[in-house]
Structure formats: structure tokens, C-alpha cells
Length: 224
Image 1 (cartoon, rainbow, N blue to C red):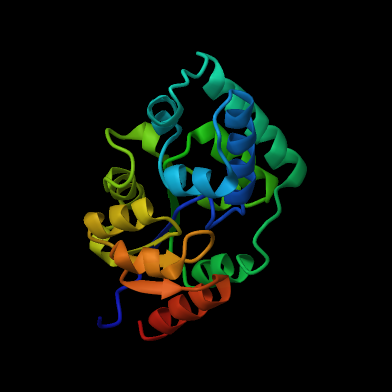
Image 2: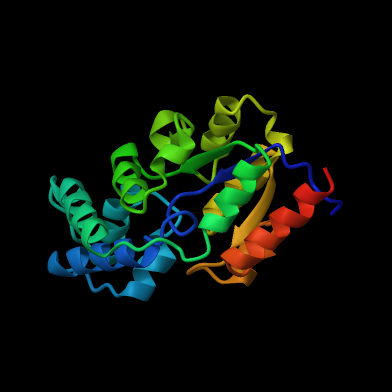
């Protein structure tokens, strides 16, 4: 691909801005095991990372013929928020990326399948929530969650930019598919999901960590 135009950058939240994926996966796995589902961290990741928690009950019914209780979702969020407040750490190399974009007056937004209250906790915990203002977008704000492009299109709209002039950064296959479907240049950031999976999902570029992401964005911005 030719060097993309970078007028705005839209980040997924979990696994990109905040190191939540392993914590959330652990909480969900422990909870499902308590309900009698034969789950482990690998199974939980493969089934649900990059999706929505609405996918969980039908999958547990299909795999284990177990019906989750009506309050399972609120309990899952409660446990997850406790884990975030206690154990969540910022990505060590994220700040230089945000500083780079600020320095060049490039607006930033968030586009996540997660709900706002979850992002309020996680982004607030690592001290970056205020950097995004009203440009924090959830799949709960739109008709369709990722892999549909809706949340990324909303984020571009909030930045008042055409999506084709935005960069999307996502660490999941569904998120990469959403970014590509939106029309944005899409970077697959490797966290839990392997680079080959992100490439197969259609990522235009791969960054193996936040340092590579920084260098990629810097090289594109330098020519503008």
C-alpha cells in the first residue's frame, strides 16, 4: 500500500489502549467454570475475544447445555471492574503514541465493543480517559457491533473526518474486519491474537507491539 493519509486515529480500547484482555479473559473463565462450564483461558479467548458478551450464553448452552443465570452479565461486569481497579496496568509504550498525535494536532477517538461504564473504569484507571473527550464510542451507541463497521464510522463522525482519512488500530480479528469494512486504513496490533490471524482478517499493516505502532504512525505523519 502507499503511505496512508493520517488525519485522525481511532483506537480500539481493550488490548490497544488498556491491557485488559488477559484480566477480562481470566474473570470470565473463572465465572463460567463456577457455573459448571468446562472452560480455560485458551477456550475463552478463542470463542469470545473481540466479540460481545451477548455471545456467551448461547455458546455455553450449545457447548455444555448450561443455561447461565439471568444476573450472570452484571456479575461478570462487577468482577471485571474489581479486577481492573486492582490489577490494571497501562501499556508501557502507549504514552509516546498519544503524545505524537497530540504534537501533530491529530485527533484521536475510541471505538470499542465494550460498554461505556467499562471504558470509564479502564481508561480512567490508566489516566487517559480525558484525552479523548466526547470521542469515546461504544458498540452500544450503534446498531451493530464489530465486525460491522458502525462504531468506527461513528468515531470518524465525532472527529468530523472522512473515515478514509483515519487510521484504525485494533488487536482482534473482529475489530480488524470492522476497520477494513469501514474504509479506514487498519493496523492489526498484536496483543493476545497472533499476527497471522490479524493479517488473515484483512489488516493492511501489522504492528507487533506499541513501539512498532509508534514508528509506523510517525513515518506516515512525517511526510504530511
